[in-house]
Image (cartoon, protein in one colour):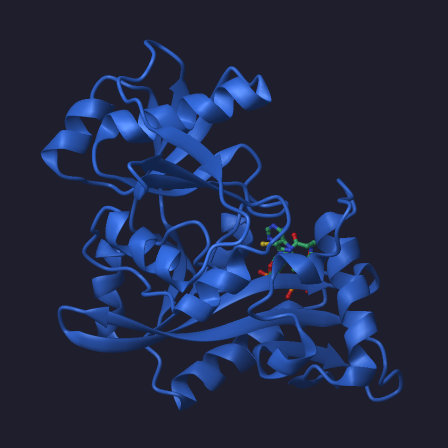
Length: 301
Ligand SMILES: CC(C)(COP(=O)(O)OP(=O)(O)OC[C@H]1O[C@@H](n2cnc3c(N)ncnc32)[C@H](O)[C@@H]1OP(=O)(O)O)[C@@H](O)C(=O)NCCC(=O)NCCS
C-alpha cells in the first residue's frame, strides 16, 4: 500500500529525478528543476514536498506533489490556502489511482490545518476536474507588439542584485488588485534567483519609475508576468526594450482582470485572451472569495 511522507534526504534524488523526467524531459533546460522552485524543493523545505513510496522499494518516489501553505489577506479576514505544484506519477504506475490517493491525502492535510481551498496551475484541466478542481478568477494575457515608440526618456537597466529597498518599491509600483498574496522580501530575493528570470527597472533621476519581470524558469518563457509603473509610457518603454534586445516580434503581458482608468485606456483595443487564474478545490464556503483573486507570475509554488 502506498505510504505518503515528506521528502527525506534519502528520497531527494529519486524525487528530483521523477520531476525532471515527468515535467522537463520534453524540453531539457540547462538548469535543474530544483533551481526553478526555491520555495519548495530545497531539502530544508522538506515539509512542503509529499512523496508516495511502496514499502518494498522504500527509496523510489512513485508519486509527488508540493504543498505550500499560504495566508491570504481578504475582505473577510485572513484565509489559509494550500498551493499545489510539481505533480508527477512515475511512468510505470500511472493510471492506477496513485495521484488520486495523494490528492485525497493533501485535502485531508489541508482540512486538518483549517484551509479554505487548495490551488494549482495546470494545462490539464480535465485531469484535475476528476480530482474535484474547478477554474477560478480571471487574468488577461495581452500580446504586446511594437507600435509607436514610447514617450518616456528614462533609462532601462537589468537589475541583477536587487536589495530590500528595491523590493519595497516593486511592491508599491505593482497595480493594486483586490486579493493577492503579499510576498515577503526574503521570498522576492529567492524567486528572482530562478534561472531565466530577468528584472528590468525603468530609472529616471535616480528613482525607480517602473519595472517588469520577464520569464521564470521553464514556465514563463516570453512572458512578462509581473510589472508596475507610474504611467503606461514607462511600461511601454520596458516592453519595447525587451523586444529590441531579443528581436522578438511580440511578448505576452500578464494583466489583472480590471485596472484603473489610465491602464484600461492604454490597454483598450489591444489583443488579449481571457483565462482563469488557476484551478481550485474549495474546502470551506470562504473559498468563494478566491473568485476575486489574482496572482502575479511568481506566486505559484
Ligand atoms: C497527470 C498524472 C500526474 C496522473 O497521475 P496518475 O497517478 O496516473 O493519476 P490517477 O491514476 O490517480 O488518475 C486519476 C484520474 O485521472 C484520470 N487521468 C489520469 N491522467 C489523466 C490525463 N492526463 N488527462 C485526463 N485524465 C487523466 C484517470 O483516468 C483517473 O480517472 P478515473 O479515476 O475516473 O479513472 C501523470 O500522468 C503524470 O505524472 N504525468 C506527467 C506529469 C504531468 O503532466 N503532471 C501534471 C502537471 S500539472
